[in-house]
Image (cartoon, rainbow, N blue to C red):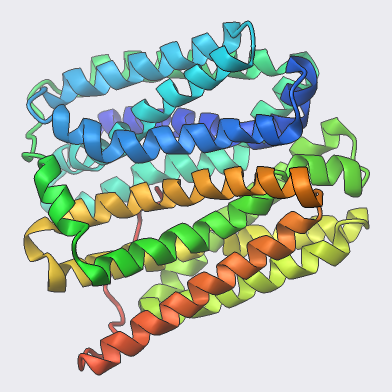
Length: 401
């Protein structure tokens, strides 16, 4: 694999760290800035909203910009966003920094896959994309716990400074290693993207994605306050629990991909959503016991991202039937749907914390995930009605988001 691909993987690692590290720091930031825990939770929502808007809109608008210049521009924007967060004098400035960084994130993953495949021969395309997305998985396993630890030891601002240093290294790596002449496929116009959103069967997949992913974030956004206030962990131990969660996610992503290959996306998604809802229900009762809480978080990680491969495979299958000329667009919009789910989940979780308390988030999250299970079953029924056999073994889905 060419060295340029490692520069992309490092960029993905930096971006993945900044997206999720905020979860472990929510109580710390809330105390430091004198805002409520739900207000700090909005920092997760606004970032995800930046990704959801940035991916389709900015990708369409930057279509004529040479890929390398765009990549460098995005990493510069990402680094600046994290520097603004580091120096943020207050809550509003930190919010603006999160939106800015989210915009860079959305476009990076839209163009990152095409750059990765442009760096290798055709037969290695899937491996190249998988390697780039490994950066995200590794971020969850190492970047997020480490960033949480740094933030709780030296103040949350230092986490953003550390991530902006990663941004600088990724920028320099891309500048030196990525060739100037990367072929660029013409990105879809906003009209093409809007046309995809008129297809009911694709909208159904996006609804499954938003509910299945967002339901988990109702509780995940407030995991650190739950661990500190309900389970009785110290702030410094939260980073260790995040490490447990991250390792579990890495396995869950691989397991989810194999399950989707073996059983087909619909059956795989039904299994993952049923287990995820069960784990969230269980957390309502186990959170008060530190050991049981950690075991539940371990199980949660295994299922939380296990739905990603199945969802990405299924959206491509549906797009090939209902929008064959816009398969990439349909897949990209599914990434926006993940982030709409995160934004709504974190925002809804904040309302639940304000009105019903922290421990209402896991069971309400479970109910939302059961909604995704219901919609998945409906999609399967519609497929059967149309005479479409459940598709199995469509190659590994590698996208994370």
